[in-house]
Image 1: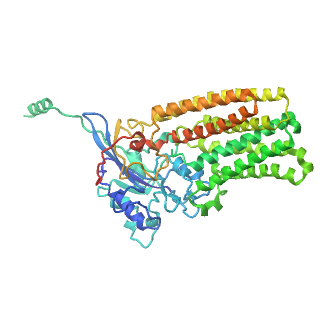
Image 2 (image 1 turned 135 degrees about the vertical axis):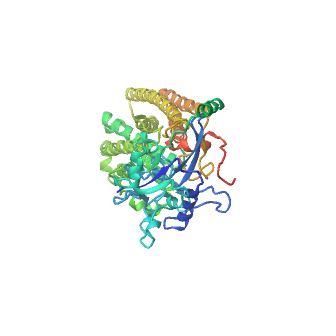
Image 3 (image 1 turned 60 degrees about the vertical axis):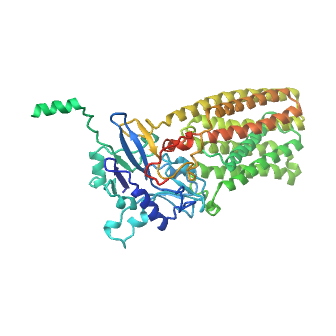
Length: 220
Length: 323
């Protein structure tokens, strides 16, 4: 089993509700807190999920793209074998990459090894923290089945994010990746990320006034 | 990459200690126990022990949570850092044995070449293991190269050799011929090291050129231009791989400085007087520090494609944030 989150880049509107809900849940949850130096001022501290905004393509085909970026829970997670204490580990039963804070020495080698820069260092506790795929929620049997999913998935207003098992060929996430050419980031670095993105559909080309007049003339 | 002082001291001092002990072992192997006086063997082994001990002490400050240190040998099968802890500890123990045993048992003074030889084998392994920590990280685009192993081991071994040369010149006895041969070999090796260092500077440049927002995200339908890196603003305190770019001019000056220091060591080693030897050791130590600082500070990590503002000083619009 390899749990994953698939993000449809056509649906993401960059509202950052997943970013905020991640911070909110994990600050109060079993793996928190996600600290800030100035929590009621500038949020300059730790984020396990960041929404990167970028402009794609060139004029006149430009568009704005939002890319939620958190731990990719890689199949060949490079952060795991480098850890000297075994604090970074990948769960065999569901593929989630986690950090055992009790064994972490805060050497930050895993942060160097992660190609995506999604691991964060907690200066207060001296340990490295990261997205847990809300393991405390998805394994909490006291929650209703619909609530047993990561906070970022549950909070997405456009349903851009889908949670499921990538190793199960009949799962929704596997079908989405297969049917819509889902891709992972920085594939050349060999980490084989489990988290995938569904690419933007091509936009229709720009239509000028002449083309509009010509279409109208043909029709009427 | 943030060049923290424990990292600089750890890697630099371990390299010098290993290089010193390896050079002593080579002297013992080629010239026997009589290559150095008993006092010189003792003093140089003790110097090596102090260096490796100071490096080990610095490593404690590299850990931010000491309670987890009891698990440090848990990942010997996969982690070069875990192996470094083991091999450097063994190096320290072997060096300590080379210092302590002849003092405890004066009859063992003739064993210096064997004792130092055993420590030298461990030193070679320890230096290799330390270099592999950095060379085996694909995300560290600047370091993921065999050049990292060659230059890192070279810096340590040659730095230690310059220290040994100074000790040899100070303490003797030695023949003028063997001393000149040693100095010649050392100078040749330093020239070779400088050539590898130039190749490494080029590798660092190539790594920097791979970090381009237009193509570097792995996304289809490029080019892309970063508008906002998320809510966290520069300098991204929790990201050690984010370190302000040192700038083109400063980089050139530092690269030139490394080569100039190497040239100064080559010249000083050739003079073959005690004071020149001591000066060479001093300059080699400064060279080790500057080279290692540049190695960390100028390194390019793949994730910098997401954090260009911090590295290039760009002011990005902060879409979707309240500031």
